[in-house]
Image (cartoon, rainbow, N blue to C red; front, top):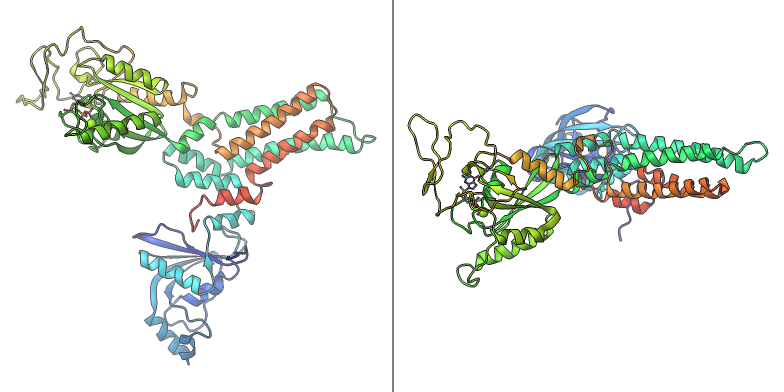
Amino acid sequence: MVIYTQNDTIAAISTPVGTGGIGVVRISGGEALAVIQKIFTTTLKEKRLPEFEANKIYYGWIHECHSEGSEESSRIHSRESLVSLRMKNLIDEVVLLCFNAPNSFTGEDVFEIQCHGGVNVVKNILRLCLKSGARMAEQGEFSKRAFINGKLDLSKAEAVIDLIHSKTDMFSKVSAMNLSGRLAEKISNLRNELMTLLSVITAAVDFPEEVEEPEYAFVQDRINFLIKEIENILTGSVSSNLMRRGINVAIAGKPNVGKSSLFNALLDMQRAIVTEIPGTTRDVIKESIDIEGIPVTLIDTAGLRELNDSSGADYIESIGINLTKEFLENADVVLYMHDLTRGISQEDIETCKKIKNKLIKVGSKCDLTQDSCEIPKQKGFSEMRSGSEYFSLVPDLEEPQVIEEITISENRITDSQPTCRNCIKISSKTKAGLDELKAAIKNTVFSGSITNMVDIEFSTNLRQQERLKTCGEFLSKSLKACQQGIPQDLFSIDLKSALICLGEITGEVASKEIIDNIFSKFCIGK
Ligand SMILES: Nc1nc2c(ncn2[C@@H]2O[C@H](COP(=O)(O)OP(=O)(O)O)[C@@H](O)[C@H]2O)c(=O)[nH]1
Ligand SMILES: [Mg+2]
């Protein structure tokens, strides 16, 4: 088993491995300078070991290292031959950033080699670092060292993870706020408040002759204040969790109601195939989008219908339909569509009943109905004519031109069509109703409890929420005891436990397990 120590010098590729503008290899630790001196030269004709000033950027070359005692070095008789050996073994032209302990990200000596962003180049430079005395960094080890050396508290480290994984602008902004220390500062203020209260209580317990016990009303007031503050931080937890996790929104309905068209319209691209042939979509198609700040995985599904023969030509479609049913069960929100020109059927109603509380009913193709939805005035399209066997969308151009013909069966658009009163009427063609639909998705997710996600003051993750809730429980317990007039030294034990919970959020008090768990979520090189 390899046992790593905190004092090792570590190295890793810090940029994604692929072809790109630049690649970065980072080295941190007491031997970082020695590693760099073996593999970097500021000019190709350099004869002595380079020295580096902190906070400076150096231009130079990375070359194969020739460590003492190696085969190459024994062959080197003069400085001139070292120069020629370097020339033969050049790896890349680079820029080197130097930071001296403790003024670096990790708090140790750090060098960042910015090289050309080629897979082989970065891998070669890392190989040289490892050959020259560094060891491969573990996941998140740079950040973990920053935490251990007091450069980063746990809430900021977790904000970095959130920022890296953020799928929406809104969540990036909230995570950046935490990275700037917003949550850490709040927690630190609450800790100070609680510590002051505890010290007043403890002083009176330890020195009853000299220090007077604080009044119960005062203690109650302070505990109440802390409980309210914690509740306030937790108000944003539903939003935080959703912004972090995202939601699955599935579009379902009978064949040809316009599911794939809505999928494309929401994505603003032609991702799914749309045809007038029922059963076109057979597989489940997924794409990620940002709907009102919520990261959404939008899912287009195969149309739901009973197939006469699921072994023959319909076999593939039947697999698609079964898959759809599975996706509907697991989705957070289901947009169940029916074609407004056909009306809603008993079958649709039955399916909607099964979906229940995560259901949004959507009426499609409202551009083809006369009275259903407010169609924004679209330049180029004339009013619809109904009642004829053929329906034409005729643009208001000088020369009338048929864009599309849709066959309509007898009595297809009549007043007697069973309609769904509380559905959102949309048209993927004109984009009418799409904003309303997005707002409905957001409202369904938040059950109307939060109207504006931007308002959340603090973003917290599950770990922080769990600690805050436990802290709140200890505070409530001590408040109750205080109200009952129980001796203060007895309920001060609960206040101490509440203090530990707060310390675990920022990392003042945190077990090795918690710390390892947090930093294992980082990638290597971070
Ligand atoms: N006029 C009009 N036609 C639509 C609209 N949405 C879909 N369609 C048409 O309805 C047919 C079926 O659409 P599609 O999206 O493939 O339906 P799906 O089977 O439910 O995925 C296609 O011919 C589309 O052009 C709409 O909003 N307005
Ligand atoms: Mg489809």
